[in-house]
View 1 (cartoon, rainbow, N blue to C red):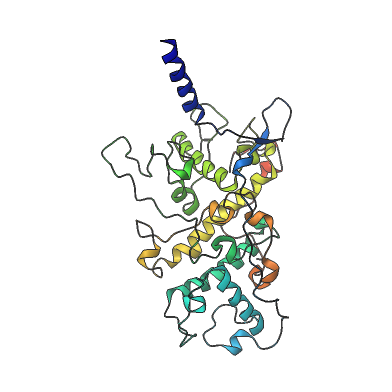
View 2: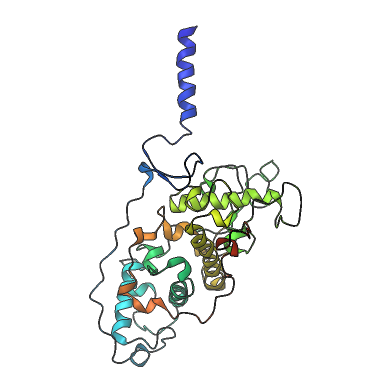
Length: 358
């Protein structure tokens, strides 16, 4: 009997351990000793830096005739010099267009001024979006900035995107839930959490609030306690998208306390609002432009989340900046804070006023 039980026990132990992440880890202490404040990195999960393509040719000097003077129907970047405009178009060929199509992916080669292809209309709006990200959301992208390549990586459609979930295939079971739940899903780390937190937090403007200052119902609970599941699902997504654990932003002694959090939490705060701005103003607004095959199961266009840019690393492209080769994409700094980009809660600077916002 012992000979039978021992192998079974060993097999059961291996099965349980299969749920753990085995292998070497790197640990960095981020708080007081004994408080469990450490940033842990699974070495085997570290993503290799993406290969960044060289510029098609050196960036030409600015000046000379403008794109608007040289070409017809230039509705965006018309004031950019023709030489710089041509250079950007060559870069976009590398960053976005399928190699077999090149310029014809967006243009009719017989009439380059024509707007007959939806991809040209979308590309215009994406150029404006990129300028907005680099200028109005420098609180998140800092001086590194983004280009079309940050998300597209040579693909006409970014590899990592989302649309509103179709819903559970068995609505009469316990799985029935407005946003789907109890079905292992990669978006939330294969946990039994609502697997579509994006519609609530990255397209909508719902509060991301989990912890209250009180154990009892009170006005300090901005959202229902049950919404903690959706909030946690979003945090699982952020963790996987950046390849970090919770203590990258939060202090495990008090997840809600801004004054104990790292500076990265402030960066993430603006990042979430930046993604909302992108999805609401630059992608959803193009719903009537996108063809059906570029939309999700419920007819909404594919949108962005944290993985779209980060792709498993805390800084997209390993922190390498490409903006110097496309300076026009920096845009123009706004005169005031954009809508939806309220300042980080005062608690981040003033320990006495803790808000618990994310």
